[in-house]
Image (cartoon, rainbow over all chains, first blue to last red; front, side, top):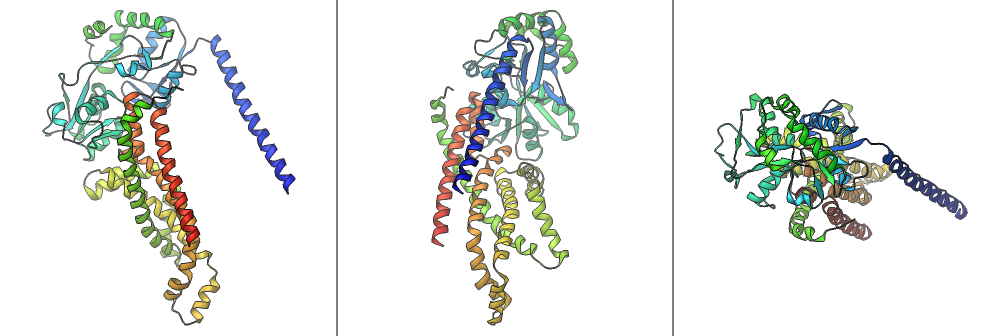
Length: 272
Length: 215
């Protein structure tokens, strides 16, 4: 009996060693060939229509069309993969599998401590969404109301400052879609999210009688950037291409396609 | 891996508050789930297939669908229908209890059926009624055998309550997600949450093995 156990144990250990060794050599192989190919892989959290979202199994949205124009301008091959937010954050930080993140990421000082950002490519602001007839008129009216946001967005950050991080009336959800369901079911008085998201949702749900409220004094402009690992060489290559796309009218064309109106480029150009 | 302990310090009070919610959700759900599960377990053992069917369907549904989906259905469907609006605390307890009831029902059934039928026959031949034989002979033996499985279910419940972050119930994982959002870092919040869950489940398993030894 004892000797049989020994055999089983050594067989298990041998299997474990093979598996570990296999993983190790796999990694080496892929990082070795990664140096030769020039396909830039972007990670994205495609739950953010109309910026990026999944249409069946293909990723679509403003960001996707925009990066296509930029990468054509730069003459580089690329691929955008829907990885979800957490995977995007960690893998872009490591910079091996994915060299950049593209997901309507707002440029903030806190985030700059861990990542590099491209030049700003999109101006946005947060918007309050309420049901018709609500007495909420500005961000400060939200102080003692129940507010739903998506975790890890600038809306979360802004509302955490206004209401307090530990306030349980500030409800954070995994996605804006769930936050908006919470408003629909009466669990929240308002949703705060990026203006493009709120407008898209109101447009798609005319029966729900929703209103969007902008509040420029409290919700200032913010700018989206492409997310790079610290010290990435990609930034120097893509920044000129981004500026070129914004200058040559291609940006305006994409913007009109997704938002039905021309962008106001003055702030965006100043921010660069 | 650079690990920033300073940002954990700032979130510790919130994590502790979240821990209280996690404990609250787990205790409320194990109690409600067992009461409910006991009824379903007995229903499951009814002789007539016609009466047994709904209980079987309940068990199969809650064991055969992910808790993740159940939480969403309860939060956005069941609770608004009865309560008028969503409420994460109510949906948390309801979803976990309903789910747990399906598993405890099977634990009860297995426990009762594990007692030799001869025990019941012997009790009946002593002149006990069916109910008396269940209460004084079968159940005491069954309960002793149910304890390990029941404790296991409790531990699973503590861990599964982390899914309630999905509907913004302010438990441990919710504050982990919040911390992740503020700093865009994943290791600090997730590892902190892992340590808290481990402390909870490990002390629980110690407590349970103590109870097992005492029985």
